[in-house]
Length: 257
Image (cartoon, rainbow, N blue to C red; front, top):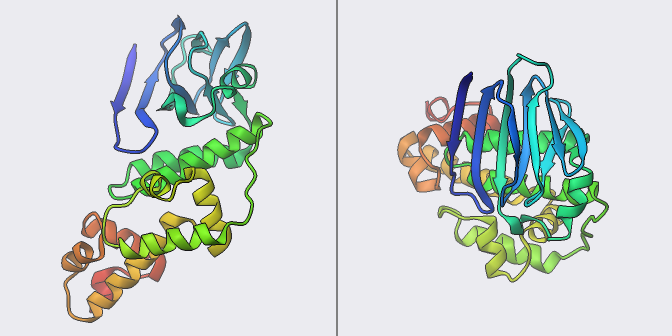
């Protein structure tokens, strides 16, 4: 019996669909066109992938490659399981990774699991889609390392400076890592790693901190929190309040008072 199913399509680069489900369903052998990154929050799922049997649990991240048949069922008959799945475009990873992932679909590194959970957390907060991009790229890096094909990160200070200038110029405008990478003629993963290495902060964190600083000046100048949120590029006042309090320890309203 299906208890809960939710599917949605956030406007995030590479992300085709987010799927949440709580049920005891056993599904037959099938394939899909996308990469599937699965977090099991409760219970466990046994599944066949290719010609091997595997088990997905809350202790690890499960990655199912496109085009490879798999099935699935509760690890304990009659018990429900709860899972969250990110369906990602085929081009999210190099084509050669599909065959490797079919033999090693379980990533036990806690940092990879944490990154996947951060994707879901960012998707729950309006205005944090750039953070979701960042964590998707982090999951990608972990998977490439897991499969024995890590991408090197040579220092690239000129590229980092170009991205910083771009982010500064468009501080209050909606910005995505994917669009910036296309404009700067580089891969999004390399762009994020170069920036983080040069400045010790991820691009999305840099943007948020700069916007909070701008909002602080606007509040000090007499703008109301809702006005400051809009002028500083936040999604809404709640978005400003969440990050303002996290960074400065007080709400915008308390700061104004």
